[in-house]
Image (cartoon, rainbow over all chains, first blue to last red):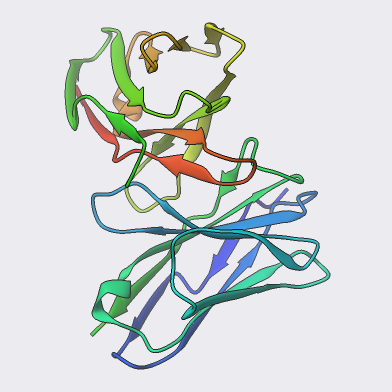
Length: 112
Length: 111
């Protein structure tokens, strides 16, 4: 049984570019949450998708957007990249809510 | 800002000893808490959770204690092993869907 899978594992972009990160949830899970983790910090909630809609959003600008597909997989898009967007982006899946979130290994994004 | 914090950023423990990792939270309305372990290059791994209607919950070699009076959460690891070396995060639910993490405690196990 595959856990949460994320792609790519590493990515290098330049300021102003756009990036798309992908996530496949754990089998049987229908809810996907995205987190940003800066070096040495705890993960920060970006948003959560359930039934293909954004259900909850953290304190992130509109440059951060997402999508959930009918198969429950999800994408995180970040436009107009800033140096400060460099971080580990984590995807977590769960069944319907927030309990027992299972995390993927993340995508390490570097913005130069 | 973050409402969940850890008392100490680092903890060094002798192999075989018990470890205690502490966490303070500020939102008295939080009703669900989780401890995660994060190893280098990996995502956070679920360890144990506890609801606010409980004071204690035990898992395999781990125990979580919740003191709602002083808004304090702790994770106890029995017979700490080298594989327990990692960063440990406590997290709380501030509303139905948003999990709020503290900054983490780095645990180093000495052989």
